[in-house]
Length: 320
Image (cartoon, rainbow, N blue to C red; front, side, top):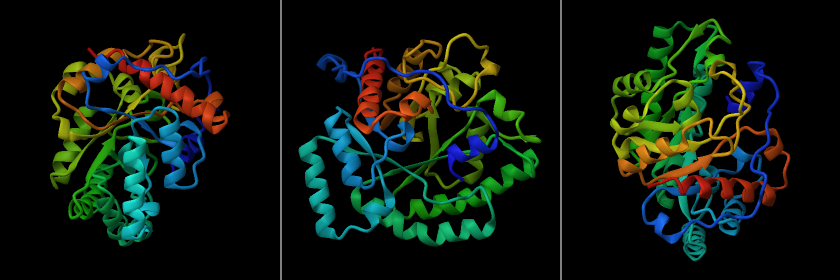
């Protein structure tokens, strides 16, 4: 299930507030860059940008000052050895690396749908491995109309264990994003896990050793998780990080999941505490924007990339 479709089906309203107002790329001081290993990452679909190929996404990342780019598993799996070598040489010249890939398996619907994805996953995972991509991420629905908490938990353990086992065979970790938005917990009959503590339990039960987190500042804030929760993790337990801010003037429980702001746009979410906690444990993976923002989504590719890059560079200035 596509994340955006899930939000639409849940009737959560239209995307809202305005993103960054200035589109000039804010260059981060060289001294600040030395304080972090995490990379400013472009995920085209998360900011409404349409890129048809891996090379097109790479070109946008390079043009707008990103340091890493989302890996596209189908594109990479289709490349010959020579084509892949050429792509990697081009990326070296562009000074960009791969961040994470989205999980190309639908584990949320029917068993038949799951089996289709599992059948294709070894080929796609091999493509990621050949390209040097070691991180894959997905998100967890925070509620269900059909499954109670325990039944849902057990289904996730069984299904995600199959996914993680295949990824592990190809040297890839699986990151799980818990969704903490409070409105989503009451949108369906049975609430499901929506905090870091609960996600830790799921990861422990999956038990393959290569499953960790996709941490989103929005969900960390919505769930009431803390700096100490982040510091309880090891760097290798985090596959990717999403950075967002929230509209002003609403109580936490009033926010819609698909109405967010670009990083550090409003200061509602304590981005500095979030980023510095992640940096303190030595995280070295991608940090990307995922604001679900209507104005940003309506922009042309270059304009949206410039706005997201500027916001992420500004956020990184908060790293001590």
